[in-house]
Length: 158
Image (cartoon, rainbow, N blue to C red; front, side, top):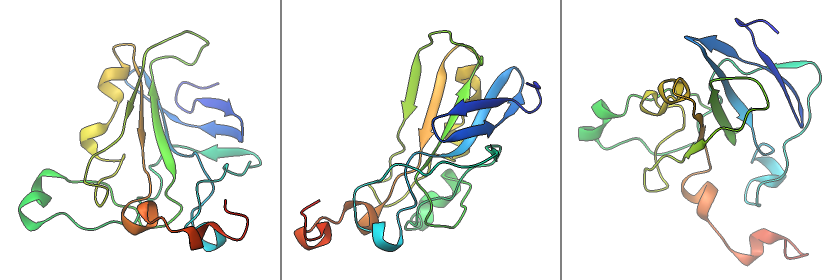
């Protein structure tokens, strides 16, 4: 494994991340299947496996969302990557071994209508350099994430 292009194995396959100032980052990791098509309004399904090594050096798609009100945009300069395949997470870790470390899971705010785990405000590099594993997440927002109705569950109720 190269320090410049670290690789790790997860249940679905291998990931290639990046190293920066002694911290390893793996970005845009799918934690569920893409939530569109027949899965649009259903609970998350497991992510599919992949062949080869998946690039995890860039943030994944940002969930469709509303824009911030005019007065707030200057405070939330986020990486916005369009696409509905947005159920992904980002991990920063100080080491790639079996050591036990505290994990901080950061779920962004935004009233379930705005926000993203790829905001520069939430980058986990600084905490990871102090021995903490940091995870940020993108999740479905607005009606795509919160609308619940029995007709959406299908004939089998789930």
